[in-house]
Image (cartoon, rainbow, N blue to C red):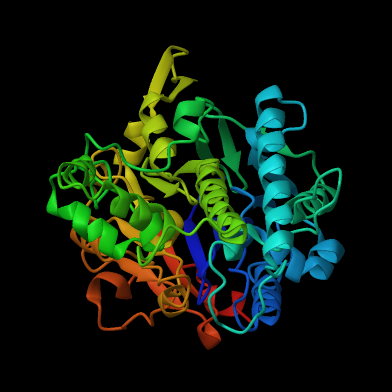
Length: 465
């Protein structure tokens, strides 16, 4: 059964991930859905995701062979709730999740206990501070809560995360037993595409490392204290000033000039005007925001990351929302296989990244979700295509304005994939010669298709109602 074409469908105008991998084997189609979500608070989110899921089931055959869930953020799983009725009726063949969700994995159970404890604390802080438990779909700022999803009402025995109910539904909708994937494992997507599991890492130091090191420029913003890029990073940070990076140089200057009290006030209490504010309700607000940021980063770093091998040995990298530590772990992952002679052959994680023909850009193009030396600079193919699932205008309404994609990341992507960067919030221009042959837009701007391998199917137009 030979693979004749591979199409990656990116559903559009979502600040969230929803990708359909369509594999053609001699005229027959297999479909894999990688995540299905939209940011909480997006106007019309319920109808949008029902339209998306209707298209998932209605194109290239009525069945869905596999669902891959990368991590529990709302912008990756909310579609399973918005369109629960459709999933419940139609179901799907199999389900893949990361080891972090395995109810028999001790490390996974420990991580889930940690997440549950943090979620319960967030719910309790929300009750104290009078924050709403869910964001309204009014198109305005929802902040980090938009990623976390609705908070459960605080309970004495802890608040159940909404993602857990969604995951339980997914297990019930799957016709096969769920698979829980760990780095180093090899499996196959429906349609017979070999798939390598790169992450999430089991090393807790890497699992909880979200930001670049001060000593190294791991991302395209860098974090070295004396570097001008640090100022740019602070200016472009998606968070309010009190949560931005501070360099050793800045701290030492404050100490030398006797302004350490002002620095502390600016760093931890906002504007720095007036006396230090020790009101207990402000302290609760501060703690809520700090915990929300930490939980957001830790959850992103628990992303399941896959390298899907195409028939010509090039790869598709689906990086979900992986941040710094997750990316750094890939270099240490090895895959053991038997060659045609029965001899062992090792494949390294970075080898797979270096063969990338398609890169699903991490975390909507944010500042610390695409690595430099250990990431994009390894992707040297001259036919590399980058897919960014974003809604930049809606992102700018969040918090102090989230830059998704970040300008520096966009610049780097344009350099490595010139003329071959496809965004979910922009209409693809038909005169872009580099894209014209491999990109086709769906009706009503619902999706954009990218031909990752082979030729467009002869019946392509008839497969898209």
